[in-house]
Image 1 (cartoon, rainbow, N blue to C red):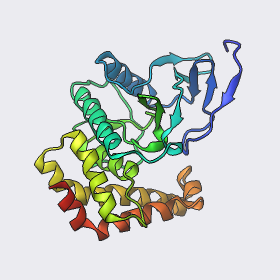
Image 2: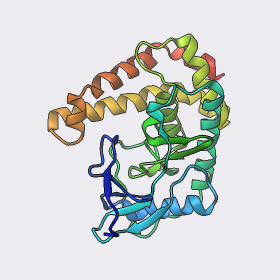
Image 3: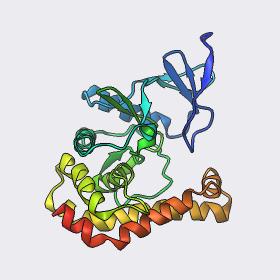
Image 4: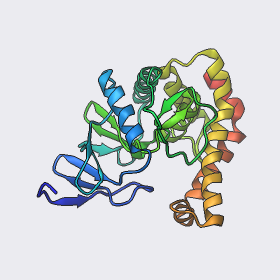
Length: 252
C-alpha cells in the first residue's frame, strides 16, 4: 500500500470492496480487466470525454483507476431535455471512437446479458448510477462490464435508464425525453425504427437475468432480486411494451 487511508465507497450493486485511496479507486481485478483497461486507454488516447484514467494494478492485485469527484447521477435531479440531448451526443462520440479499437490478444469480457450483436465494444451499463457529474464535467464510471455489443443495445439501455422509462411514467412526457437522447445521438432512420422494440427487449433482459438469478442462487443477481430490482425491471419492460406506438411516433 502507499500508506493512504482507504475509504469504502457507497453505491454499486455488483462489484465488492470498491475503495478510494487518495485520488485513486481500487477495485477487484477480474479476467476482463486487461481488455477493459486497454479499451479505456484507447478511448482516452482519442480524447473521448467522460472516460476515467486507468493506472494499472496495485500491490494487492487490485485494479487502480482515477477517482472521479462529483455527484452520482442517481443523486442528481432528473436530467432536463437539453441535458438528455447532451448525453446522447456524448455516447455517440464514445461509440464512434470505439469502432477502430482492436482488443488485445486473448481478450476476455464479463458478459452478464448477451447483447444482440458485436459491432463494437460498448460500456454495457450506461445508467445514472454510473455517471458522475461535477459541474460541466460528466464522467462514466464502472466499465467492468464493457464488452462487444451494438450501438442500439447500448443506446436502448441509456435511454431507458436516463429518461427514465419506468412503470408509472407518463408516455406524453416520456416520449419527448426519449427523443432528446436519440436526437443527441443523431440516430439514423433505420435505428429509430428498430429502437422501440429493442427498448423492450433490453429492459426485459435485465428482468430475466435477475429472475434466473433468483432461481439459481447466482450472486449478485439473487440478492438484487430479493431487494426488489426484479419488480422494477419487469414493470419497466411492461410499461415500454404497452406504449410502443408512442415511442415509434416520438422517434419518427
